[in-house]
Length: 172
Image 1: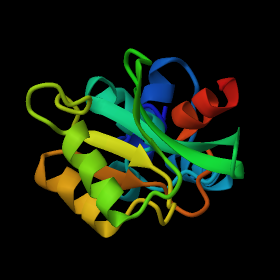
Image 2: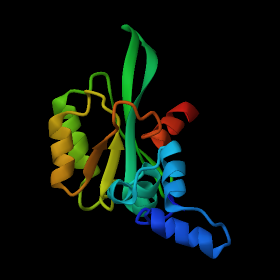
Image 3: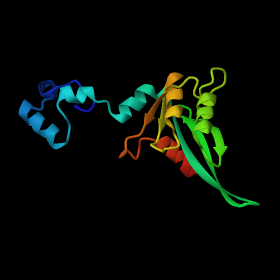
Image 4: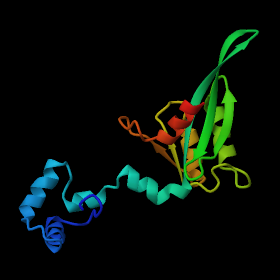
């Protein structure tokens, strides 16, 4: 009940349990929530879980990531970096670019192409999930933000933050 109803406090949960015939004290509810790591209602209400955030913004959310491809050329083995974006709602994928060295100028151009008003892949997106890779330059993130696409950098210890993009890379 506490996870599904962020604004419900101990008394409200205790009352709901009483309605279905389970007679417990509010302190018992508090102890059970504490034991399971669930915070009190005022703190719980201020934090949005990642799952709730995704559900609320599913239609305007995209993710991006790089994967590498090794290509044998006359100069030897060359690593190419492939940047792609994926819309979470439709799972449509757009290859944003392929390069041997993603530098600042390259990333700035990619941001411009992705947010182009006429045919940019992110034209209808409000959020773009990305990992903490240094290839995503400050210019890249600020250009996206200026065009109305808020870059979301995954926290350091959040392995499932960019799960949709990571799953696509595994498919490749």
